[in-house]
Structure formats: C-alpha cells, structure tokens
Length: 173
Image (cartoon, rainbow, N blue to C red; front, side):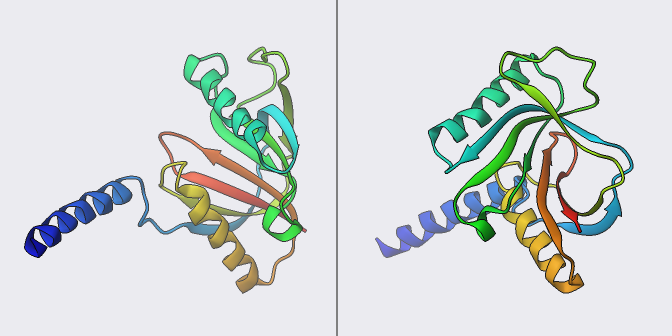
C-alpha cells in the first residue's frame, strides 16, 4: 500500500512540476533601469477600493473583450498605489495596453490612460504565464529597489503579452 502511495505521489508531483515549469514557474525575472522611450497607452476601466467581486469582474470583462477581438492590445494594468505598502485599498486601471488612442473605438464605460514618455522606470521581465508572472515580478522589483536604494512614485504598469515576456514597470522618483 505505501509503495503505491509513493509511486502515485511521485507521478503527481512530477506532473505538477512539469506544468509549473511549462507556465514559467522556474523562470527568473530580468530587472533593468531605463527611461520609457514612448508613451504607454491603456484602454480600460478604473477601480478604487478593497478588491472584491467587482474588481475581479473587471479582469474577466476585459479578457472577454480581448478574446472576442472587440479590444485589440495586450492585457495590462496600471496600479496607482502599492497595496502591500498602503493597506488593502487598490487604485487601479484594468485593461489592455494599446498602440495608440485613435485606432479603435472603446466599449461603453472604457477610457484611455497613459504613462507619458520619458519616465524613469525599473522594469522586470519574465517569460511566464500571466497567472504566475505577478508573483515573480513584484518581489524582483522590490528586491532591486532595495539593492539599488531607489525611491518610487508607487505607479506600477503590468503587461502580459501572449507571445513575449510578461513585464512590470515601476515609475521612479
């Protein structure tokens, strides 16, 4: 009995490790400091408050619009505060990173936001699924900020392209 338990447990653990590796769970983020060469535009909706079902609904609505082709771009968000530092309240713009503000019409309730060009940022990138990437990128940025003794404006921009590494920027002071 215990022999089968270990065999089945080993097989399940191997499957879990393989899926985790496939999703990028073992990938290490690359961090660099740079200046944004051009503005980053997002089409989406603003949320402020304690994350709840409405917050989660924004992500799923945006994903549905993306999958249906109603909005074209890359899944992405702007956070205007650091929830870990400032408590549980979130100030966020949930949507898609788009190339410009003129090429597509927005659905009702959606608007554009931009991160202007010329911003000094710390950027972390990792080739991982959007489900795992934030858990890798936030700690990598926080560690790099401490190591380099940098101060932020607590503005974070996330991008989760399907065919390129996920990335997160934090705007520096």
